[in-house]
Length: 79
Image (tube, rainbow, N blue to C red; front, side, top):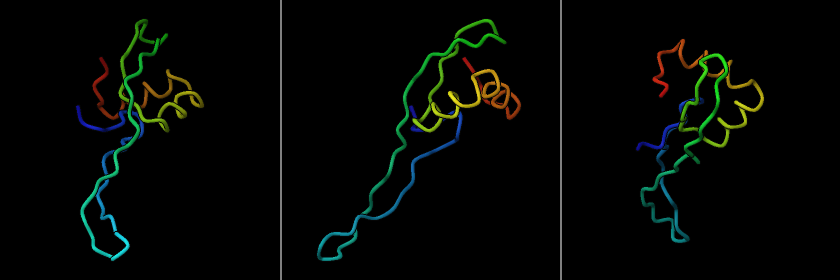
């Protein structure tokens, strides 16, 4: 499973760690993604989404129906 949020589209970002001696080594920042199950009244069923912590806040703020409608409009697969 890739670390990608289905709501916000957040993915892994890459950079470098810098030590005390300023030696640079590659590293990666992964988003805080979790598998969550939501009841969607407009579809009449549960959906399982991979969402980041920010995506969960977006769903809480806008509502699951509005978020799912946007996801379907941009062609996201919802299972």
